[in-house]
Image (tube, rainbow, N blue to C red; front, side):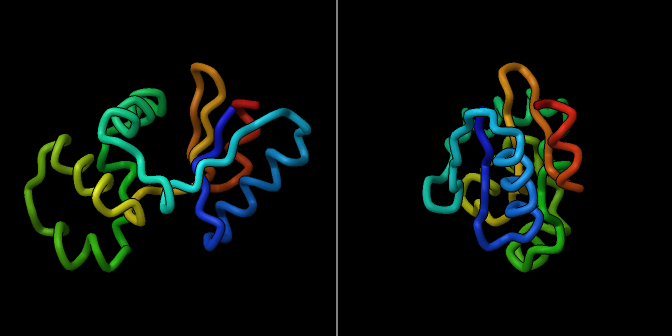
Length: 112
């Protein structure tokens, strides 16, 4: 199991606490320090069963200033998130063939 985590994010810390309480083994991926590749992010989006746009933090200044009013393809949205990892919603937990975004963090319990 993996959690894609941003230690500066309250929701991400809450999600991490849920995993710690579960006592299940997991790996922490700090995706701001170790950015995801386009392929990795594409696989996560597919596992989540969402569109790339659904994973974008639309209130981030980077999004509002550079991408908001543009008509972007899915590939371009994924590239924007790879190049600007702050744009990725968090936390994301992958457990085998299941994935969830921890918004709210309790959603993570559904895949443990």
